[in-house]
Image (cartoon, rainbow over all chains, first blue to last red):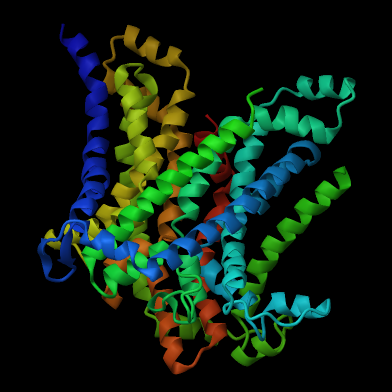
Length: 298
Length: 271
């Protein structure tokens, strides 16, 4: 009798500590953010009274919010879409053509263990207007120097380069691991039927690794919409800046940081946080659906 | 096609090493030389850069803080996650379905979204601007991913082992501690390593929650060093030396245990 009780109750006991910590530091703060966003709440002085949806109304009339929203979505698109396609191509190359696998994998994952702060500082130098390597290389083929920080699109490209450098190899490894469990006979059969490699890739490989593609799409979407350190450090003023002289690369997270921890308006910052959460949810769900529909099951 | 493929992968690996190599070389060069000849080797050998970075930005203290904080948090995360992940991997009840949703939520709630209430809560608890506060946050926020990762590992262990233990009269907790944990050692080590690297590089939470310079982590010291250079004139050599101090320990871990890390990254996600 005791041992049966023991068996039924043990799983709950084992999970309880996680549950507790996650409840306190995950679920509760999410709801609490909503609560704070309905108040005039100053970070130092605390709650100054209920204001209903005033913070949201102000936010929806705030051009800086739309600017940050645009930058966030733009940076996400420029960094994530090419990144996942490149990772897919890279994985296909590694899957079919290389020996000494561990060495290649190690070389490709390398950027992922480098601190974001370090990546941001080094890439800011690489994209420097006067002394950066990108402009030097462009100069070799006769292109004029680009002031990468100045433009909206150029700054987004530079920041996306940092994100891509850190994450392409990581995603490629996830794809590679999935590709290696695809039975080789399928490729042999396709080859006998006269299918090209290109064709085999799209009609055998990609459908077979569908769960992994869905996973990476969702995770990259969530991460790509929250960029902070890369764009913040691309600003010469660092985390004290606003993402460029005209906020041309200020993301929603940076705007949230500015309002919450430099202006100390916790209520307004919480409203930004909830909008960010909604944006993340909508994009994650939409990308999940689009990917699921376009990558058909095998 | 095949040759092109090898060429492309080669180019990428060379580029990755090149970026880090450039960083290492420039960290030993003098500021103006780095800008005059970004690819050159003039003035190479300036150890002073490292000395300057170390002494001017309080790196010594920060290094100590980071090592203690990151090691302690990683160990505690794995200790709390392992039982939960095991229960999830092995129980086929309604519970596990509901739990899966919970983890998806946990991984899906961005820290940035909940940082304001976390700050308010931690302020009320007197844990803002304190390393123990940062420790609590690091543990809490690393849990969902770690549980997710370890569930994959425990799920891949053969059932027969536990059945045998049960027949021998071992209770579930004893089975877990004495039989399952030793078998899952590789998975636990991988989870530990991934948390070490992730937390070592963490910047956003530390930036929000730590203000005093003697409580800074390495990432924050580097940011501070960058900020002081805004006023005192920039010295790119010393700055890159600071970057190296932050990056080299994790590169060393990677060179030493990279295989484990690569395996670990791929196990959790593929399922």
